Length: 282
Ligand code: ATR
Image (cartoon, rainbow, N blue to C red; front, top):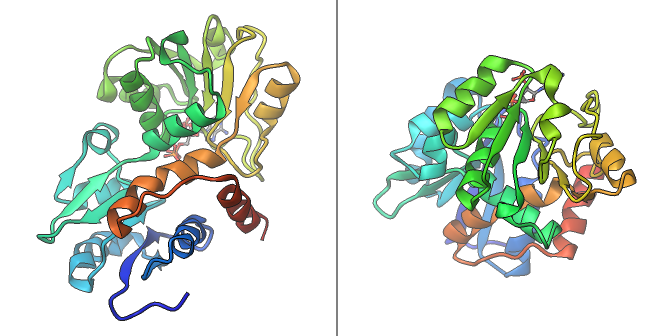
């Protein structure tokens, strides 16, 4: 769509950024709503991240998404953080306020929960403990969101124990840590299993986890969306567990930013899903 000289501007800052599906996703919504605006990839080297972010108000940007490897730098570069970003120590959405200040938020946990609610209609936070595999930024966002939603206990299992301990310490609340070799045992009595590592992603090894101890009515979900059905989700589905793939987390985490920058609340639809998936194949 042609844009005017008054077009609203947003984008995604990353390095590299060529793989990002965000321009395709936001571009779909811009076209769907006939908005005079643009969402562009911004390839920014790590050493330039802070300066690039601070320049956004001067360039007239409404804001940006922040992706790997800049999320922690962005948390330090902005003027204010929302509770989630503060707790996680990482920012994925920056809004340029009317006075030029930069407001940083983290919508990964929101995206995760929205995807879970949409994909597993009967899911209730009160159903029982959640097991989160991983202790990186994604695991932090998911753990904070689950506790916030009222999950009674989050069990963290991570290959590197120190990172699991740091996560538990930083986020606080009802978090327990299980050792990596005990990961199958940690599934006992759980209502939800989340893979928040990159294991199972195209080109990486699958998550090696025996689902035997996981109750039959538990839900299994993955943050990996390429492939859409990870080896973990495949095994879980074969064993009769309800599964939720990771694509919706990507789609839903984008909603708050789009709303703030372009003034329209976008929807996650089957057609959007299809369109973004085509970007994955290409
Ligand atoms: P993100 O911020 O996107 O979550 P990250 O900080 O690199 O990314 O975290 C990746 C997660 O995948 C970590 O929990 C990592 O475990 P470590 O903390 O031990 O590094 C996990 N991970 C990656 N490769 C792994 C592997 N081969 N085996 C087990 N865990 C792995």
